[in-house]
Length: 288
Image 1 (spheres, rainbow, N blue to C red):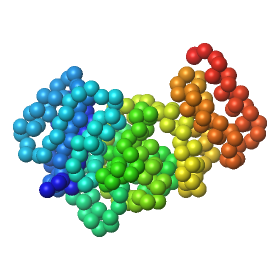
Image 2: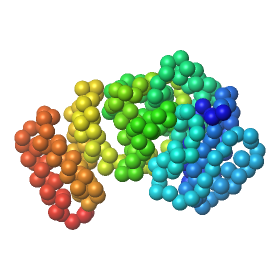
Image 3: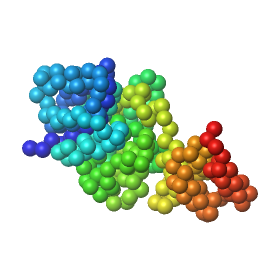
Image 4: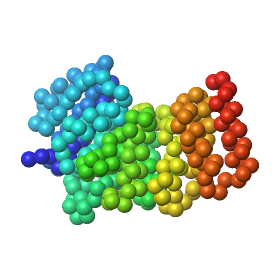
């Protein structure tokens, strides 16, 4: 029998926190799951922790260790390996909030079928709780992937994680689901996980994705669902300018900025012209 949940863990050098994450999984009262461990060739004792864990438990475990192109490449490998009906992604420094999380999510899915089910997460260091319980919050700022369960058909029809975005590929995928009326999403007021705040997404801003954020929402005709369109647009414009200043993804930034300064979005003529000149200036100037 295929597992109901596939818990996919992209791992790299997480010997200090991995055991706690694994313990939070094996303590779940709902047992119909498999564990998919995708290690990027850790240089510490991560693989030793996994080896001991495999000997100590009867959990269905799939494991590979090989170089990858980052967390989203590892997550995509996990998708290909997974056999479960629902997929969940957990880092080596994340933990479930309680032993009943999987059981409660399972019950929610049985009661109200959906393609994406999500709940609340809390930062382990900041202790900040994120409850993205409205479409506005999701479209404006996204959802932490530790709070999301995906029906595997999401990846069949929406594709896997884009390696074009270094930090926000999970947000990009989630947006594709929320912007497509063919998919049904369901928020449940449940604390899903405590997420580690030492990862890449906590320390690096994905300027490439956010230069495209407003454009993505506009193309998918969901701008009317966010409350502060002006701030979203300004952030995307700023990210375009930052990219050309830093000589990163310059063609991508130019395609986005031309969309903004030629589109119908409330920008004044003077601001459009000034932004265009700034793009030219930073494109020609040497990197600071």
